[in-house]
Length: 445
Image 1 (cartoon, rainbow, N blue to C red):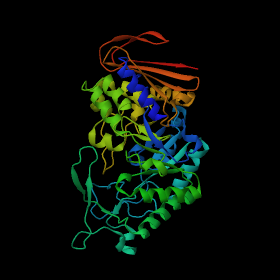
Image 2: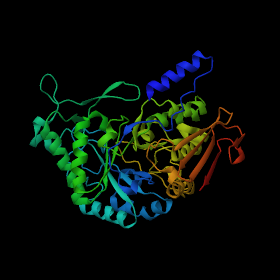
Image 3: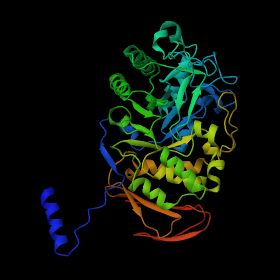
Image 4: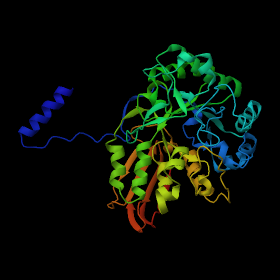
C-alpha cells in the first residue's frame, strides 16, 4: 500500500499535477500507547496541592481537615498532600527543615499530628468524596534517616567512601547544584528498591491513601517505577503522579507527569514574550511526544514555583486568570495550589513557619467554574487522545482559540493574551468581543 501511494505521487508530479498533501496529524500528537490502567475516577478529576505546614496557623492535620467541606464545594477531587514524614535534624535547613529531607518513611511528622490524625484526615476526605495521594521522596533521605543506621550500604558514596549532599542537575536550565540536607539512595541495589516499595506499600495498607506524587521521579530508573507500580496495584489500584516530563515514565508506571513546557510558556505569554503561535506549536510540533492515554498535569503554580519563582501576580501580572483558564481547559489535569483560590500574595517560606493568611477566598468561584467544566464535559477529560484538540485560527496573534472534542461533546475556548480588547469570529459560534486578558468558553453537546 505504501509503495502504490508513493508511485501515485511520483506519477502525479510527472504529469504536472500536485500530489495530495499528507493529512494534518490529529492533535494532540502522541507516540505509542500507555499501558497504565487509570483508575476510573481520574478521567475528569482535578488536583489540589495541600501544604499542611503553611495551610493554617496550627499547621496540623486536624486544622486542615476543617477546610475539606470548602474545598469539596469548590469542586476539588484529588488532594495531593505534601510529605508528612518526620524531617531529619542533621544538616537541617531553616528552623523546621525541608519536607523532602525525610528521617523515617514509616512515621508521621509530629508537628502535623500522629498517624491516627492522618488516618482520620484520609477517612474524612474519603467520606466527603475526595481521593488522597501522598507526596513521596524516593530519591534521597535526610542524613539521619533510620536507614543510615540500619542499612548504611543503601546509600551513594563519593570516591572516598563518604556520604555527601545529593548532586542535582536542574531540568529547566541544566545547572548543577548540591542539596546539602539530603543524601542519595543507590538504586543499583535491589534491596533499596524492595525496601522503598515496602515503605510505599505501608501507607496504602495503614492509611488507605489512593496513590503517590513522586518527587524528582525522573532521577530514578524507570525499571524501578515499573516494578513499584505493578506491586502497589496488587494492594489497591493507585494513581501515580511523577515529578518528571519524560514520556517513558508513562508507558507502565505513571498516570501523569508535569507539563512544565506549558507552565513556562504561560509565563512568557503573560509577559508578552510569546503568543498564540507559540501555544499552537506546543501541540502541532511538541518537543516530546507522549503515549496515547497519558495524563499531563497543567498548572500555574505549585509549592516549588510559589516559593522559589514567584506568586501568581509576580509571574503573570494581570494575566493570571487568563493563564489559569488555559491550564484548566487545554489537554491535561489542572492543579490548584494551596492559597491560589484566595489570591495568595506571598512566596511561602520553604524551611520555616509561614502560614497562609486566608481572606474571603475571593478566587474560589472562578476556580469552581473551571473545575465544574471539567466535571461536566467528557471533551475535557485528562488523557492525551488524538483528535481531542482542534486549533482555531483567529487572525490575531494575541488571541488563542481551540476546541476540545469527544463524541458529541464540544468545548470551545478563546483567550485574549494581551491587555488590549480584541474581537474575533469563532466558526459555528459567531463574533466574540474579549476584554483585555479576557476569555470566552462555549460548551455544546
